[in-house]
Image (cartoon, rainbow, N blue to C red; front, side, top):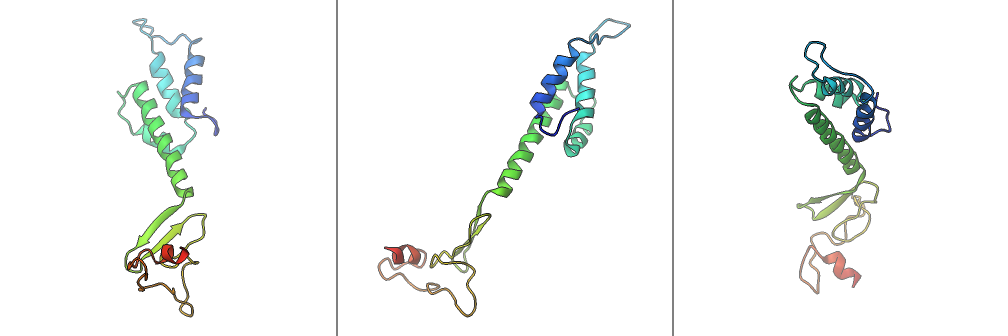
Length: 146
């Protein structure tokens, strides 16, 4: 069984090294059945339920290498997806010229650079105003800092 801290690569390496001492062969033709047994145990022992379910949906003639490759791709996708959730995302609202920073950082107004969202009582001082030096709406905050 794969442990919660073990990667797919580590797990398949461990299975293959354990299988070396086993005599997996067909009684009728003496052909090795090692890969078939490792494939079955690999799928059965995968720690992540979602990955295991996807692997069980694979065709029965998919090779051990194909199954492992599929598991590696799914493991990487899950890892990358969780990293994206934790990282900051930037969204731009073109109607209000506001950049929304989503994540661990505080949200700032694209126009004035102050905390966003503004309240009705204290609207953005730079919204819909032209920068005197650049004549541009989008860089008012930059010009105000100069």
